[in-house]
Amino acid sequence: MKRDTLCIHGHKHESYGTGAITPPIFQSSTFARVGVGEATDHIYSRIQNPTRDAAEKTIAALEGANEGFAFSSGMAAISTVMELFASGDHVIATEDLYGGAIRLFTNQKHGLEFTYVDTGDVNAVKTAIKPNTKAIYLETPTNPLIHVTDIAAIRAAVPKSFIIIVDNTFLTPYLQNPLEHGADIVVHSGTKYLSGHSDALAGFAVANCPKICEELRTNHKSIGACLSPFESFLVVRGIKTLALRMDRIESNTLAIANWLRTHPKIKSVNYAGFPSHPSYEISKKQARGFGGMLSFETDTKETAHALLTNVKIVTYAESLGCVNSLITIPATCTHEDVPIDVRNARGITDKLVRFSVGIENPQDIIDDLAQAMA
Image: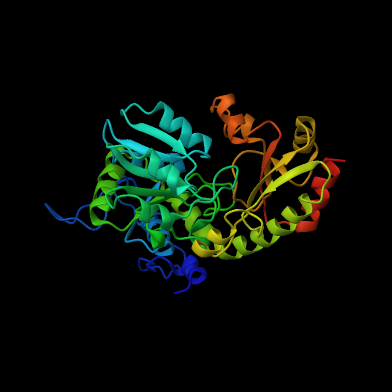
């Protein structure tokens, strides 16, 4: 099946005798055993739940993975994946990384070592390798500067034993499938585009390697940060329109990004869909689109603040990937825990605005931005 069809039919249809075409919400913490030493496929919802099964099968099908695991948030997914590593292990990570992931990696208590580099530079990654390096953690495109990493090039440049983890939240499995390019694990904040309506918290991890899947399965049920039945239902429902939403969002984003480039108060626009973007050809090679995330630098801090204060249709809020257009300043929101000198060195200043484009009429969004900066 094509991926737009998989969005709707990515899980085995099981109506459990009801004829329902939508997976029922199995709001049960436990399930009756058949007899002594005998059980159905479901015993306890922390281990497995029929509604969560539908969400996990859908994300696995979309990513081309053998198994998928659904978590209570994107950060729960990342945290559980990092349990694959032991004290003393070294991880190379993308330097322009979501602030929550940086906070987790900075404050983790398991003795892991992290080195942040521009993973778009293969030589920088190779230079950062140490005898204790075990993994490469990539975000592509990055949050918030929209840098792109060539996943296949990284896979070819590092030892096969290294586990490559890719956060695919920005492009979703509809537009990019990192496993096809050499990644071992893909993580998502399902809160964003997958659910798509700002009404659910969710996270996912998928993999192919049987050993990795077994370890993830054990960590998943042992740590217990599993997706609830109701939010599993919301994510499955959201994914049904993922293809439609992403197509509209990407079309809107290109129109808005092109308009922003013409505005006198905008100094620069970061969007991978511009042919002038340094990784445009890489994006075309490893993805089927450029997504709905962009960032831009205003001429002054006052312009950025006025923009956030004066918008009427666009919403000043954290998060991203929903049907509403959302705008924020990463330096004071998503990346506030990153030291100011590190933020500024990477270009995450108080003039940088991150924009998650929604499905509204693009002219309405442009008019709203224009009046907010007037």
